[in-house]
Image 1 (spheres, rainbow, N blue to C red):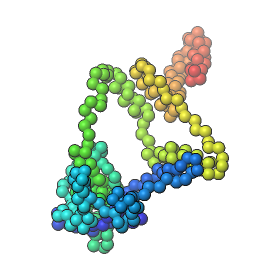
Image 2: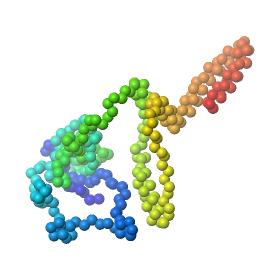
Image 3: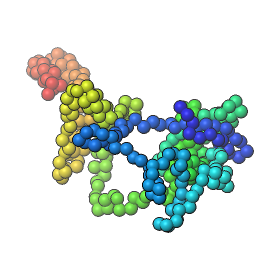
Image 4: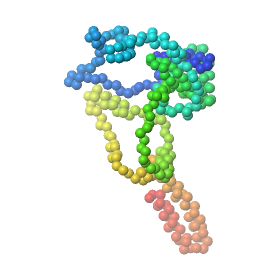
Length: 307
């Protein structure tokens, strides 16, 4: 894998030469456009409006549109010579507690690799300092023709640069949430009980089932077979429901799916058995009538778990 950028991380007078690698991959399936009657491919050609001819990549540059009739050309040399310290380095400006940053501001992550022996010690030093303080390093960097904001954090034993959105890039949430809904404490308590019943999960178990289904269709068509039929559950109708009843039913279903419902029934039955044994002992001391009734109670206790 080739690095997307090489430079250094700097904080104070400490400099860490690094190489930057993408931390994520895009496994989504891409399609080509075709002409339906003959399956001919639809291609995109870059044509000059003045000369009306197709251009090679080396003939194409960039420009900023000042107005409809005026374009200002900006070369790679212009961008490389920008008077910004972040053009050559990822510059750490501050250290903040992790909980202070809203995850909505996080963008794409990048792995940072120590570049050479001289980078090893300051790389590990910064990593351990971030670990022990549970802080993030706020940094600025300039890639792809723009200055960006990010944070350095630790994943495993590696430093990760997490790109961030600028504050003015986050849209307001005003007007999105309902404002005239009343919720009782009992409903909130039941919702929290549902959260406990559902519990946590191992995030590594999730996979892209949509991509897998599309791959099955492509494989079947490529082999001349009929694509598999996908069974899709119908979406519930948007009708008004008893929210509390729905919450309680959901809690019950979540517990039963994990086997907790049956366990509770057996547990209740087990709790009652010792009391019945003591009752039977009392019956043997002289109360024969009670002793005769004791077996009937014991039988009822056995039948209860089956219900």
